Image 1 (cartoon, rainbow, N blue to C red):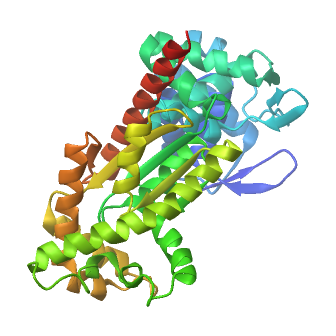
Image 2 (tube, rainbow, N blue to C red; image 1 turned 180 degrees about the horizontal axis):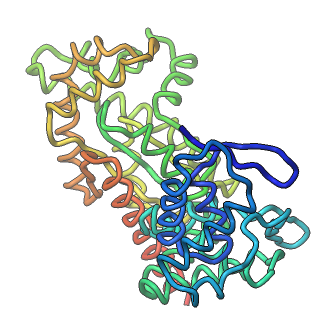
Length: 388
């Protein structure tokens, strides 16, 4: 059972290791040191039901000395519960509170692991509070993080952070295309990437197709009204089953690519970066490779799931608790989905579009982040070279 901490104003709250660790990092301890001391404190007071904040502070100091020595304690901010100290970040006339979560997110965009990025954000906040710097410009904050990454990791990673944290300041928008067969994790991955990169707009080709269906009725474009896994319906009987499926899928994808082009054109006109995900992207991604970076930085990627058993398991997981996305239709069409999967991979490789196997979520996100930022860096350099 957790013991209660009694503050000086007599209010009580349950002891939480995470909160104590956060306070200790504000005092100047490293991430690892803070969590170790908070673990020691929990063990130290495990027989207690209530502890005053003063007693907790005194005991924590003793635990720090016991584990790390008096010299370290002398370097720390003495107050365990700083009263009302909040760092503000300003840019021009706008001011916002310092956020470790947002800073961590921007650091991970350079391909740095989340736990390591979190430590950088925590250490930076602790250092600013220790120096009593409670107001800092966004530019100065960026320079501090850039310098830390360059020193701790490499100039290359620092350069990636610089690019990733300033996507909204590039000379043209960034359009990321995430293609792949149904069930390869495109929607989840798009949402996660958007959060890491600070991109606010995500569009799915399923949404584009639904809008196009309202405009083009079934008697006009029947292929548009079938699901991708049933795209072979209506194709010539002279073709075998798989050939009908792929022919129908290609026709449907080509039709949807008209809508994709309209969405991209609007994003370019508004200079808005975005992520487009969906099974129908191949034709348009091939077109963007030919176009280059004339109007936007285009980054096409195809997600795959090479293990067919794991692919099928994804549909079982998708069906849990989601009445709108029942698993049965996908499982009945699984053979067709795998045929489309193999076709997408083959065409992507033929057109030199990167294929990433989405077997492990953490590994895939890190791979995608590094791939996106490295590709973007190459395109930006190429654009600058052509201008000079």
